[in-house]
Length: 129
Length: 509
Image (cartoon, rainbow over all chains, first blue to last red; front, side, top):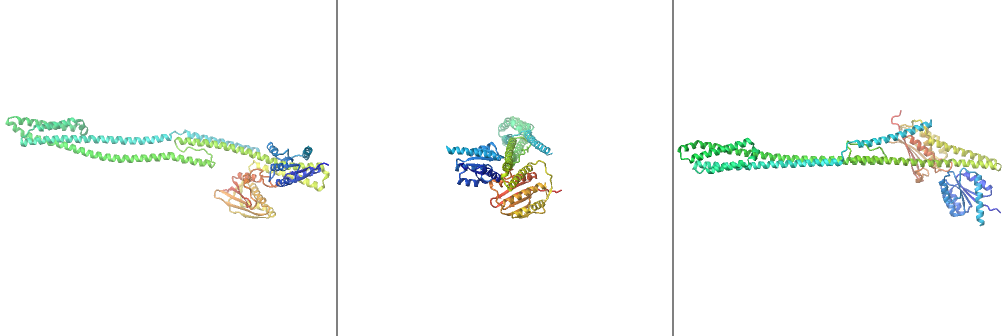
């Protein structure tokens, strides 16, 4: 039986959360969404997610903080950053904090889906080893 | 049109800065062009003057003492002379009364002649040639008479004895005349000495006073020359510290060490200015960076939302119910509106054309703005307490722009009080030519770390979609255009006061 991968989506834009959730759930992933960094970190502390999709610039806790927090609590988590302000500096910062992918807004659902599927395959491989 | 006015504006600033540069150069030249009299030279000259005065006093005293000395010597000589003559006359008297020897009288006369001969020069210098010759002649005549008397007395001829009688009276006459001359010369000289002494005393007092006065003048002169420029330099540094970068101008006729100081200050002003311009430039660049980041974020997010929603509809159109599809279309519509409003605000923020200024009544402005927001206030459970003075003088401004500022401030106040509260709008006339409008809420307050940033474009603490972060930046720009200023005072949990200062018209047209 195919393992169900758990994905957390964090973005202060509710539409992003909703669309990603709908889309990824349709493709067989389990998705939880959050619009504040604090809520996301509270949940990350309790539960292990395979993949984190997060925005960088939000009111309240910055995305970078959440990425570091996620890395600390579950080091095998794979983080995809989605940002409306994509520059080399912000991307570097995200990668240093532990992100593995960086996608600039506006992006396509298919783009995210492909990435998520690719990461899921990686995780599957890692688990087998 | 917009392009043209922008260009004009840029041209003006360029001209202005080159004019300032020119002015600075001219001042520097004016500082240099003055004739140079250094402080060192002035101090040296002052002391030289004092030295000359002192030397003059010394020379005068020396001359005075020399004169006094020669007079004293004359007195002595004349006294000796008078003594010898007196002695001679005594022997002469004894000769006639008791027939004693006349030789002693003659030797005294010779001694008197010696005195005259010995001190001839000195005496001539005091009483003059004529008088001295007279003295000498009468003494010689007296001697000649004595010699005759002596030779007549020695002869045995009795007729000669008879001849003695008229000679005796002649002798008496000449002798007393010589004595009288001598004593009158002595008296005259004494008087002269007394006069010399009193003149000397007077001269000492006068020169002392003159000396003290010159010292006083030199001290006050040097103090003026040194302390005043120092005080001025202190004033300049204060002025510069307050941000006035106009160059230091020449204040005196001459160039000295303080002119060098002034020129150094001017160079420093120039450097500070250059650095400040550089700083402003880099801050502008940073602001542009911020602006770009803000624009990217504010536009990419709604675009992303539109893209995701459209993609969902395109891919799985049939999977969703009619309501869900309608909801998604509404989302798209809202996001387009959101992006559009960001662009509109951005245009407001960067608008270059000058708004038309008219006479604006503050009380009217506040009242119409409050009326516009009446609904908003009731919906959010907000009490409004206007304290507007109706007799305020009008301000020169653009009513639409000023209303936009007030709207922004009032709406910020409303949003800061999600559970309702009181909004105070107060106007006061200030003495420095400004009208102050305070908008005070009893809301959540602004954290101190954000206070510096709240007027930056795209800085916002509001939730997504509730604010673009341009409202206060636009307001700030508008108030600056009106030559006013906007300040903020906030306490967490207590509320925030935004104060707008607008210059009022002193002579409303």
